[in-house]
Every structure is written in C-alpha cells, then in structure tokens.
Amino acid sequence: MSVNPTNITPICFGIALTTASAVILQPNPTRGALMFHNRSQTLLLEVAAFPIVAGAPGSVLIFPGGYSPVFSGPTRATCGWNGHMISGSGDVTIFEWP
Image 1 (cartoon, rainbow, N blue to C red):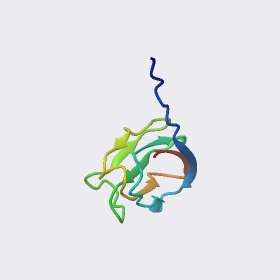
Image 2: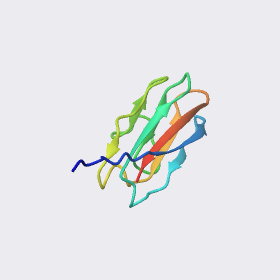
Image 3: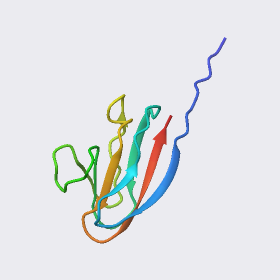
Image 4: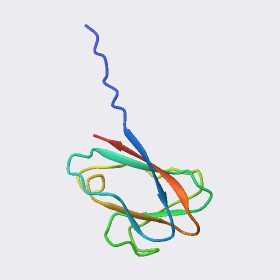
C-alpha cells in the first residue's frame, strides 16, 4: 500500500504599500504559516507587533525581489502584521498556508 502525500497550496494575494505603516495581515489563530515576497524595487519592512516602528527589534527587512523566511508556529504565523516601504511605494505578495 502506498501513501500519497498531501500538498497544501497557499492562499496568495498582493497588497500595495507606501512609506506609511499599514496593517497587512490581521491576526488569524488558524494560520499555519506565512511568507512575504517583495516584488518592488525598494525595501520592505514588516513587523509582527502593532504599531510598526521603523527599525524596531523583531522587524524583518526584505530586499528588492526577495522573500522573507517562512514564519510558522502558534506565535509568529498567527499574529497580525504591519508593513511599509522604506522609500517610495511598491507591491508585496503574501503567501498564507492553513
């Protein structure tokens, strides 16, 4: 008897950000993991705490064309996230796994 692994596809959506801090994900207690992709030509800063403070401890910088680490677990994946562009405006893709 062979076992077929189940592939779980993430829910993906995009969001446009400026230099103003904005909520990019609300807390979700059923979220299993998430990852951010910076599609723009500027830096993205996101932080798991509200409100965002540029360069705050716990914040993550994502360089142009880069990806964040995959955040998983009951604390980092399920909390709310804020984000903003360091300069200018740009697009971010968010991958969210159940």
